[in-house]
Length: 432
Image 1: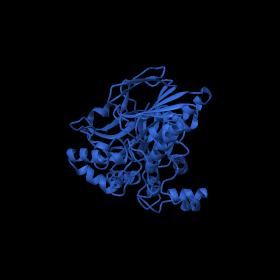
Image 2: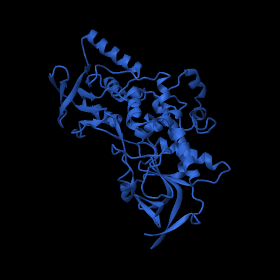
Image 3: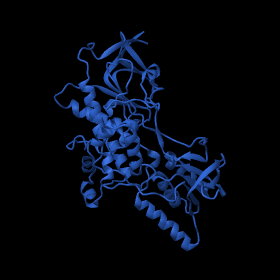
Image 4: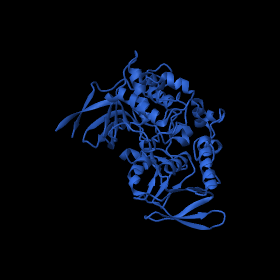
């Protein structure tokens, strides 16, 4: 039986901060004199959520509030963090606070506030299960996006913003006692009545340090063992000159650079984001450790220059010193891996199209400057990536710093490349 399938200029896969910022850019574009751009977003979560498992109420953002969803693209936008503060009645209080870095829970509330303003273009609780090309001769004219609820949308362009996936080391299997830090707050609630005696936290970055601090606070009778290969937690480089790696102009420079230069830049400036900790948190953890040494009760233990070489499902962790080879077995109630994230691979979702994407010598997807996947198939529209482009566009690929500018560039690319001669109407007929 035939059914009408709505056609959109853009179908967004996922609705995290990146595609939320795109939805806002679309709303502002459509409020202007230009030809409207139609869009709809599909999000598998039942409501907007961003790293909810790490919304520690004392944690602050590591980027300025000015790098919100809009300000770098449109400083006068009504969707700015400052306008959110005004609506919440906290603008004066925030100004008096003299701080560029809001609480993480506050920034999440800002995201939810902004998402509520554009909720007419998103379907929550709806996962994209398949994307199929629709051909016009040899050219891919549309993409049919099939959802978990049985619905289907037809897109002229796809924007994939499926976020990051928690990463565990090879050979480590998640379980009741072994989990990634992204589950922290959910797991902590379940542990409150269990009287845990020991935690092992693996990792040396901001999340690892935050996890160690929170567990040390929340479970005053438990020992917290931090395990990492470094000599100590390293401070994040947030100095003014180093932060220029996050500037919009830096994306152009990085994109044009040869691979040796790109590799060198990532090594030079990795400490701005990877395995780096805010100096205030480093100092606080050191104060705790020293105070406990003075008192003779050491609950915060650092196994530095070490690595876990064996972890059993029951939580027994064998820690090996990298300098002496000595091994220590720690029986833990929970082993928390703060070992980062990896970008989601879009190719399985894109089905038959997946094999048409061009890759570089390292097997990584080729991406155009406007964030379009490079493909050997002729596409009337484009498939755009929000994330997973660090190897082509630099360190800001999965970070908030350049989100507002990036979505403006993606939207402008779609507008500039829009084909005038298209089938009339907003619906296509599909035999489904």
